[in-house]
Length: 173
Image (tube, rainbow, N blue to C red; front, side):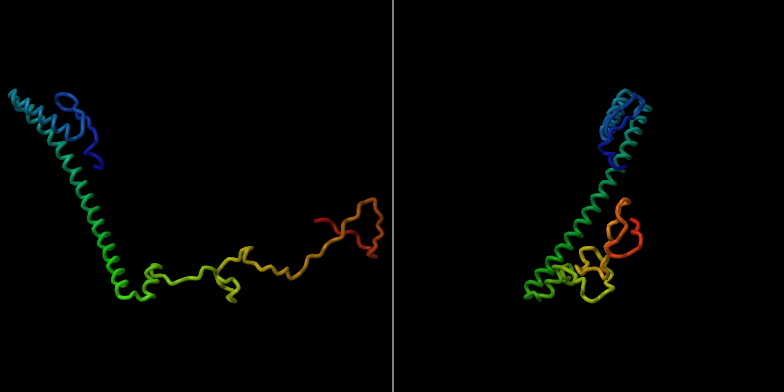
């Protein structure tokens, strides 16, 4: 039924097609019914009136639905306005009573407690539920320094090692 009031219909009546919005079709069938009545054709008059009545019922149902939606929207708007008025009155009452500072901060934060801007990651609470990110890691060096390897000797170079080690060079990973 959404947009029936402004929708264009094609009605196949006894005199051919009638095209238009429901109100236009109703007016056209009523005019045809008057013409048929003046001509003395009672059957055609009744037929045109029945066609007009069909579109009249269709239009009436659509308008009733629109009225219900409008009333619901107005009701919701009144409720919202009443809530805003109530909040405004409470706020003015708090301000006129000298405004207890703790009440004002509570109303400004929406009833939430003040929270710190930054969490201290090193507060001693190891199980804080936070995920450790590279930015939160400390700049301390790792516990074990990595060992550096000596460069591998090329195949044609002397195998005599200045360190005195007789071990073959380590394989590259």
